[in-house]
Image (tube, rainbow, N blue to C red):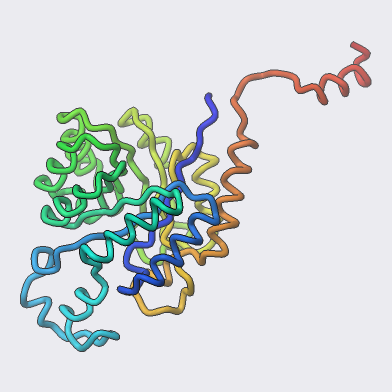
Length: 278
């Protein structure tokens, strides 16, 4: 077994609450922690949701309708131009999961290195094909999906020769730790002969670190400045200070796992001489 660098993604998602200052602060924490990338979510509100839904009642900091809440959380070109500039300045990759075709077209203008298929989009064939055509390394979340549905998505990416990595995921927010079912990581790896990461929505660090011990090649966690902030994802997110600890844990686990070769260390050889005399 070769040593693997676990790719760590800080999922900012919509936890910025439509505030670019918060987004930048979350990026800063991801950089401080030593993450490999930050991730956002992009939606074209009128395409993802029906008018009936958007006209529905919902209290939020932006008003009393679903539309006002969704639009309040959504960044546009001006904000993403600044995010692109800021991430380049800070030396960290960024990308986003598109929830519709127009959003994927929008993201293409930034020449991002990675794509992401959200669990909710796993069966959206039109979007899957658009992403796969780009040929960029793509993280595919598998929450709330059957094997048949994962087969469908993997088939499309194989058809276009697009490199991908599955991400085991349980789409509950927050997820009870006992529902993690981490044995699916090696099961997915064996079934699809590909790298398999873990996208988590639980509290704490133990599930994510256990996933690394089971061979997860990427870890994605939602992050927040404060779990009590407004937002549906805040409670299922990792506080940024725990993010720093998680990255430290993962980098230590990489060393602990080693390379699987049976080689006596210098210190062990010295002990051998003392205890065996040879």
